[in-house]
Length: 73
Image 1 (cartoon, rainbow, N blue to C red):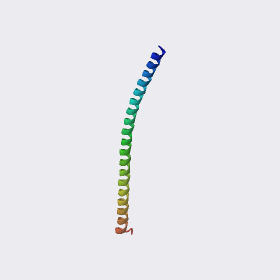
Image 2: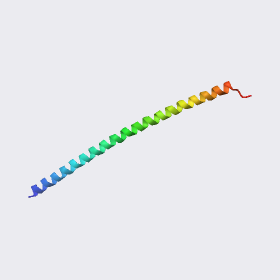
Image 3: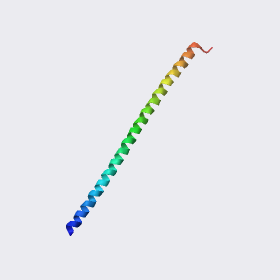
Image 4: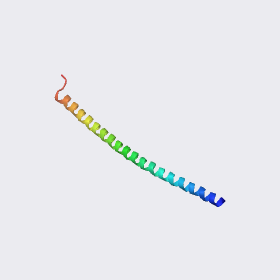
């Protein structure tokens, strides 16, 4: 009888381990999706910064040219 009890306990532990493995796989998939979204956001942020920097240079160049074309009297 004790052998049967041990076998049942082992079966329960194996079932719990399989359920936990399945749950961990789901969490891993969700984490991968979150990381992919974070990387997309990071790329968008860098693009916004690059465009902003380019526009700043253009505005600065236009202001410099305006000062040299129309000097203050």
